Image 1 (spheres, rainbow, N blue to C red):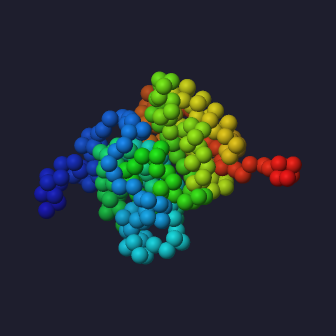
Image 2: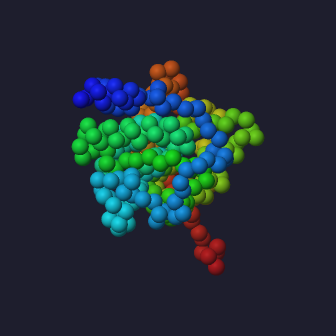
Length: 260
């Protein structure tokens, strides 16, 4: 029976049951400003948690709002970071947001296979196909998230395409809106020019401050940024360099003079 099932579904490994990436390959990058056809919730209250976390929320009417998504991996790729974070933070709900349909389907299948072979685990992670540059406020309430990840995003080298970069001053306003006070935004790239750009944007935004070196060294997430993703592993194999910028959501200081 097992052999028949494996032969019937060649896109999955016979030994591990996990999906094979070669059947889900897509273009490395997509145009984030184009309109694609996928369902979008009208508001965060319309996100169906029973679809993403069925063990925790067996039906839509069982969601009481007591537990909500805390981590968002924007442009999650093949889901390596999500899967690593799942066991480090088993009590936190997290979601990957990916624009490419084939890649999104791969992550879905990967999570389902991991759940099947590890009962009780990986129930806190999911993925959604969406355009995060357009629809972040449709998925998350004000101050809902504690962590956001932007790892190895498309550098959009041409100056005319810089507006497509997922980290820019306009979009940081939206990320600041959905991050709660003290929430962390993690960015990493192997393109130095993009690393400088992302750090500059975050440094120049009044609602973010750089996380100290001491805090970075103590943060278990930082170690995963370059080791858990396919892109990070590729950079490491090639002996490349990475550039990270990690910032905290703050409440800007307002002087008494400004208040009056």
